Image (cartoon, rainbow, N blue to C red):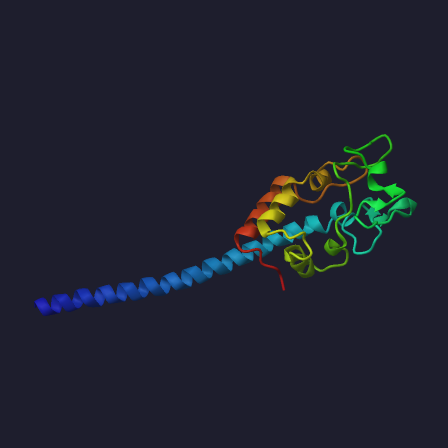
Length: 193
């Protein structure tokens, strides 16, 4: 009888361990798959901001910025220049001051300049944009945490949500973007295929 009871306890324990282990593995895979799906959905929201005129105007792949919601070539033949701050006789800061000049219709924020040419996003697919964002050779050596801090804290980037008259802000609020960035980053910043 003792042998039978001991065997029954051993069988139940073994079955329980096997069941818990198998369920745990399935659950972890399901959780990971769900996290990746959620992160990719979050990235879609992030990309909607990064591919909006507020970002693309200053992230050209050429040496010419664009302006306005229609992304027309910047007037007065404005060029990137060696440092992204315009040509010597036509620096960005000549017109773009620390705040918007609504009377003249000129946007402004501290350290107004073009993104480095390596961070040109115009014409990139969402997957290419994602890989460019994560490439430290192209993103200023930033980690994912640094990217989140830059996108949510840099004063020039934050200007996009206060663009002045006749310019639309990005499609997400700053809080919605921060939430999407956090979800994407916490899941390992996956990129779409």
